[in-house]
Length: 436
Picture 1 (tube, rainbow, N blue to C red):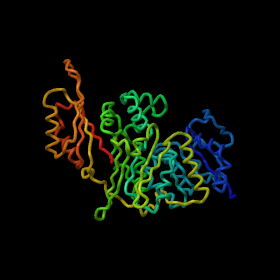
Picture 2: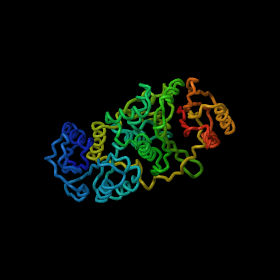
Picture 3: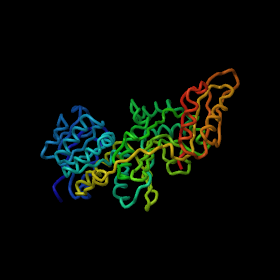
Picture 4: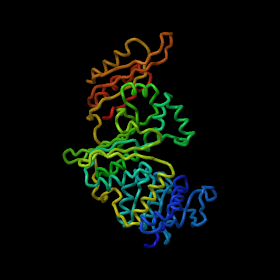
């Protein structure tokens, strides 16, 4: 066998400790498959004395993880600290700038700084791998960049955040509202104490922007992702979707179309109504699933655990195995200089059906006002349901839900603009599109 691949590991949280356990348990198997052993040389974390359930005594300790970049006995740095900037980015820049390989699970850093890091990697002949940054243990990046490399990818969509998927599927199963299920998710460890990135779609948007760049050969454009979360979804929306033959899932969706001399890139993370017979409808709990549609291979479905120490550590070590084998691949599937700048696509031109839920004052004329706005905006209503309450003098707001016929998104947008400021609306309407 060749000399060992020597690595330094920054970050000893759940995933970092998982990497050490995986390398210890499957070391011989990994060495046989990689052609050489993967050896941990040094580690770093914020708290040296914390008990992580793994023996750290065989490894050198660095209080400053950026010191890894200067060590002659390190070939590859594994960054599992997190954060789009700060120490993680400083380490990534120094490691790649010094010609060392970098393996990371940091989707925020890749989404915000991926092009810069890829240029450093290519300029210094250093591998940059980040399979674990998107969908945990699912090899979707390898699947797109290698398995589907001969195809023009026409659309990517899927469930990219396990926390939101757990909450939605629990609401579906139990009939409880969002806030109650979120508390349970936090107690079980599926949601962070501050769940904003997960429930508002930011985490999924990071991942979608990365997948889009790989799939379409475009430059990363995280800022252009139209991002909406699930915090406004109610049990009544879940029930109405079920009655229509749908489930609600937080979906990341993108496609890219050539128009004239420009590529128009559409990227959206939002709750969608998914038909019960669609493959994504059966994806429940903290699971991820990604669908890619290629012009020759057809529909590909990648599904599995999207987070956790074992699955994420598996993806990290898989990247290390590729590096140990000498497998070389451009960080975004093709050289940075060939990645094309894109123009954000106008969502108003997209045609689909929409579910629109209004919270309104229970008084005469409200339905007429809503239907008039839809009519004036050219939106055809397929069905409408009013969730009222008993005639007992209660003046609580009521829910009105409608489903439109297929039409341009600009129509629903225009209708809501016509209703803006109406005293009949108690809160901002919720719009969810129906996915085919």
